[in-house]
Image (cartoon, rainbow, N blue to C red):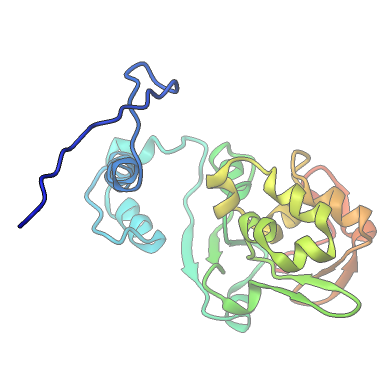
Length: 231
């Protein structure tokens, strides 16, 4: 015999919205991917198939000559988008008119505003050798494409330099922390960035594709570093 089941509903009002409603798991995430894709398609001006990788979006932008594509930024100059599989390939692609791209949190807004222009952007996000955190008895080494979120959540960083983990956790919002990278922040030396001052305070050493530079010699001024063209 199956027992009789009585179902009751318990409502817990949510003060965060006027409908006193809230959701969890799928209810809160189902709409996100379509919303993001709608925004991408609206900006590009043509359909983009999933998964919407950076390469697919860029090819769609170049193929479509609509006003929507032009509206992405009147001051933004055209450029070529390339992806490097490893550091050697990235170095070979580099020239005086290129820039390396991982998160793009500073680089892309600067280009959109006309503050910077490059003939080629080299995507280094896929280079595994440039990401990750390693700890030794004498140092903590963080790869250039390591995101702020990874630094903030790293047990190694939290144990070795707790203040650095706290700093990373306070950068921007979740979207910025999961996209932006420590290497980009240091290389661009945005006066609003947090890592440059941390590098100076920690007497850090910056490793580039060609040399190692002490932090106090690396940072020169606002948006200015000791990096050479193509480095």
